Image (tube, rainbow, N blue to C red):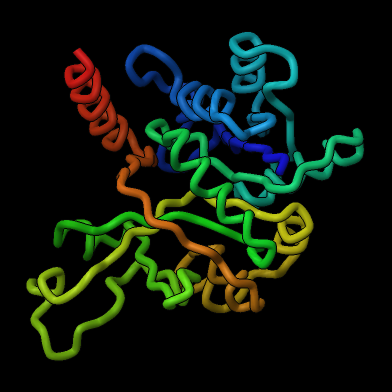
Length: 258
């Protein structure tokens, strides 16, 4: 199974302009995701997909030719940016069996997580896969910034929401975690290339527009999304405040290694 990791990286973030090149532990955020993807056993190639010359130049100078590709600045999501990269590589005769969409603002992603995601495609029925991690605090559970997921007994996603799901009708909200398991979605996806090409041209759906979650478009279209649990709770960086939290986490990790 030949796996490609594509790392979308946009400079013009509304909440954090220039985020991929912001420094974490003395090096740009984008370096972390690329380094893990490029050195994960089982991943054949890793490519940063950007629409900005500053990111393009940095990645090329740091990691070499073939590590980065310029893409359109009109994409509505990182998934669409991944689709452009895969289409370009296929035109060059480079085909892949699985494509991982790894956001460039996930500096704490692990090789084990990427391998777990890729392993979902050992099942020939899998078309899309993603990860989840257990929620352990009320703050996590009720924050709309944390996307929650509920799954069927088959480990396929039933629904994703910014609200806490499932709702517990006869239990006060403060005790929901005592009554059952809740899971946060870890926003890393993997696709069969032909499925990626199809979801990239789908119009936005009603549920997607409501929750601002693109994966709901895929569910509404009838695709199944395989979900696997990871113990690691990644810190995504969306704002400067998130970067401060990531710096604290990185210092803690480095101290534990010493």
